[in-house]
Length: 114
Image (cartoon, rainbow, N blue to C red; front, side, top):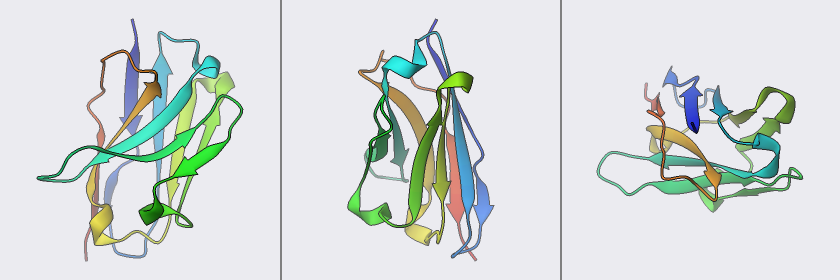
């Protein structure tokens, strides 16, 4: 069965860094576009970054130059390196494939606060 497991979140001060991981199972990982999303309190889930099968990347404007998405097909894992974190980056971060399967993991909480 399809499963996505996010990890690596935590509490960090403004300007700090984190690296999130997304372990996928139940899919042929290398054949899918992979996506990082986030959902802040009281807001809708938004796309943060995508990476294609060929590792072409795309970012929402608010994270360009600060976040970096990557993937390791041998490990069925995707990453999100987040630098220069801001309080407005506080959210639960989720990963998923595109197209998706209607299945979401529990996400990983990122809190940016002094």
